[in-house]
Length: 242
Image (cartoon, one colour):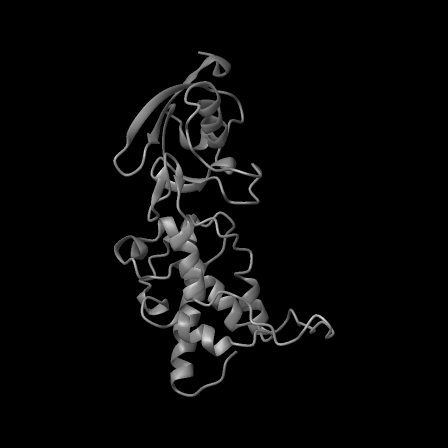
């Protein structure tokens, strides 16, 4: 059958925890993304289907869902790469409360960001000259490696430790903490380090590397978490920050 007239068999989660999968036949198209499929279902088959998206070009991260068992940005996931047999199963992200259908509540994710003190504490006002930041220092290179995170929660959904430990801060929050610990302009780096190494922090990580494998922008949170573990020991022994 010509690809322009082929049909995809798409299972989509409907409801909350007590919901079920519903199957839709969706026309298959060239260069079709999974987000295109979800949008077609909402427009033509199930107008009440709840899901999130914004930019559609891999910038916002809001369209993250579980596709054939793997957390992904659906706007960057081409059907041809994940549904060679013409079948798709689309679910909400794992490890987060389900609101409805494919939409999850990100409140726990951002609350853990706050627990890790993932907010910049300024040491200067807007009236002061901009602080020079050398891109060549080891600390700056360590911070640069993690600053592209856009909080899509894919790593959080992929993390096995989050799945069995509700208190674990998760890869994104700890990655953010690592960038601040290495930012000499931040006014509370030691406070960030101690928040990130407290109960449920970096020492709970088992280094499975699922966050690295699934991150859509190629960040390595496991490396940052290892850095927090190392730096927290240095801090315990009275050593200096980076």
